[in-house]
Image 1 (cartoon, helix red, strand yellow):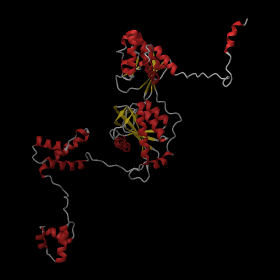
Image 2: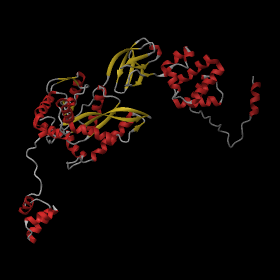
Image 3: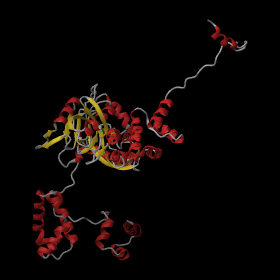
Image 4: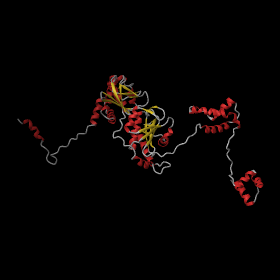
Length: 496
């Protein structure tokens, strides 16, 4: 641009001719003439790009690209693969860059792997929401775990709800919806999903889907319409797809830590509420302001939430455990061998015998795990005290109980022998059924201090420490006056 100005100024102001200007600048006479006439000072792009080295191979390349149209996305020709085939199969001697330029133009000409375009849309108020799952790490009670998080996002306002679960099973899927409807205080008319197996049993032709029967019941209970994306077309619900990444980058960095999953979900809920003050790019109002307009258009939720409970039969085996989803849950040993009923919620396993609840466990989501309540085995171990040290429920519990319990066990065994002391110590452990852990630990500490060597002494301490002190009031009536005459007491024996 500096030389363009130089040429025009030298010609118009100082009268330099074309030959002089050509010698001064080094440009051709035609270029100087263009600058004087004021024509664009740039090079024209070619309207046609010849490929002399590729001439004999153009038809072959086009054929290879055409054959890719029916092939899997990851098994199509790349420019590098085409170049390698030309060299190895057809003795091509040209450069790879030439092949790359032609392949790029040929794909446009043949309509192959075009990036595509999107239609700008204005979603209807309160009509549609999108759902998706994400995956992230978290630290729960000091243990690093891999969790799934559920996202539901309003297409109109952008307000979103996030909740974490150990898995993506159907009960978690339903439970997440129930919490989301409570968060939004209403139900969207249409909810858009991937073809996830918790909702779709079979993908049919076009938009038709064969839904899971339980999902149909859930959807009918909340009276909304489900809509599913085309397979492999997650961008059809791009809002929540982007939200999954936003949540991971903003809510999960640094890796979140909590004492329980419920505490972690409370923190996520606070993050979702804070996001309401955010204004999405291209919009004039905040998320909360838009949602306030949208709230009135949502369907009112039912007064009673959907019953998200599964019931199934079971049977206690010889280990006094019931197998549920490839995991074992203990029940009291006296019920071993009997049929039971199992109630499954999203996070609990409750077991009933003859209508009576006999066990309640936190639900496990991996395979081949054991959830053992030591209390279920105490009577059985008391009958077989030699198994005390190797019994899995006791071994697991022993890692957590206070060190004073081990000292008490040693004292009982010194006093009553290995078997007798172990049996008596099991009586102390059975006190957990009636007293809390802190009270028992305090009683054991007192017993050790005063050299008590039986479970009866522990029970006496617990009863005494939980009984209000009886205050004996002082004698009154003679204070300030003469004390009573006690010599009269001796005369009582003389009375006939």
